[in-house]
Amino acid sequence: MNFLTPGPSQLYFTVEHHLKHALKEDVCAISHRSKAFQQIIAHTISQIRLLMNVPQDYYIVFTASATEIWERIIQNLVAENSFHLVNGSFSQKFHETAVLLKKQAYKQEVALGQGFEMADLQIPASTELLCLTQNETSTGVSMPLSDIYELRKLHPDKLITVDMVSSAPYPDLDFTQIDSAFFSVQKCFGLPAGLGVWILNEKCLEKSMAIEKSGKSTGTYHKISTLVKNIKNNETPETPNMLGIYLLGKVCEDMNKRGIKTIRNETNYKSVLMYHTIQQSENFKVFVENEKFRSKTVIVADVVKEKASFFINKFKEHNITVGSGYGAGKETQIRIANFPTHSKETFELLADLMK
Ligand SMILES: *Cc1c(COP(=O)(O)O)cnc(C)c1O
Image 1 (tube, protein in one colour):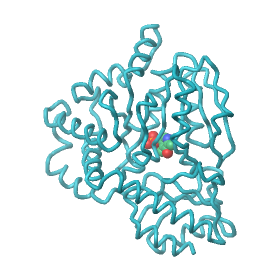
Image 2 (tube, rainbow, N blue to C red; image 1 turned 90 degrees about the vertical axis):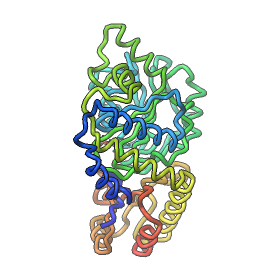
Image 3 (cartoon, rainbow, N blue to C red; image 1 turned 180 degrees about the horizontal axis):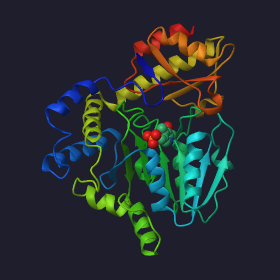
């Protein structure tokens, strides 16, 4: 079965091979404090850095998942005030995390399927952290990188964090324009779930140390100061998902061999094909009206006549599983993941079926 679901998704096609190799090399049995494992961590970090062009002075650390990173970000980068751009379920949950942690969490909301016009944003001067969801997985709305850079220009004094869980490594993000970004591995990287990757700069470390100094808690084993202290030694505070870290390094290495440019070009090709197919079809309609906000990696379509489940079951007969709509859209939408492991051939087959 080909899983074109937006996470978990189809495993990257080399994972089976690396999994066998991991067992042979006892990756799950060696000590997480051993030289051998430190080398695995160093390899994974260097491959992520290369693939996503992460500057040398940005830290790359590991957590359990992106949901955990939401919590760590709020604990470590916000003393009082955060600001959230909310346009779907994931950006909403990020905001809720800040509310639950008792911060003054302001949000600006737009309707589902819409993106943000930077000129309309009203960001209080007291904001310490801007929380952006670059690719809102529930609605297929993405934020143009130029808008992120514009926010940086307008707010040079505030920290900016970018949820790129369901788009990385596709966006060619200039990390010097932001302070922190993060993803989980079960989306575009095509890996088993249970590992989050958090990229952050020195300003984030300084901010969290200042909050600690003020007497506030920034958390325990996964506060930034502890994560950074450990990663400088290619270690993690806890016994981490060693297999996940190993596999991520191997898959990033494979993607680097294929070339990030090639991966981006293929992603573009498949997304053009899919949006075109949806536009031509009587049964489907593109959900995100404004082209500039249409996600390349999570494509959402309204199902016009039948229930979404009718088409989902039809495609399954041809070994393709697409995602259902998210939340309220469950019966009326389909979501198609366009990740690096999804082949052109699979997309061409799906396009034929949709016609
Ligand atoms: C999936 C997802 C998350 C949560 O990731 P987990 O691995 O489930 O913690 C957060 N943000 C976005 C945009 C997502 O798509």
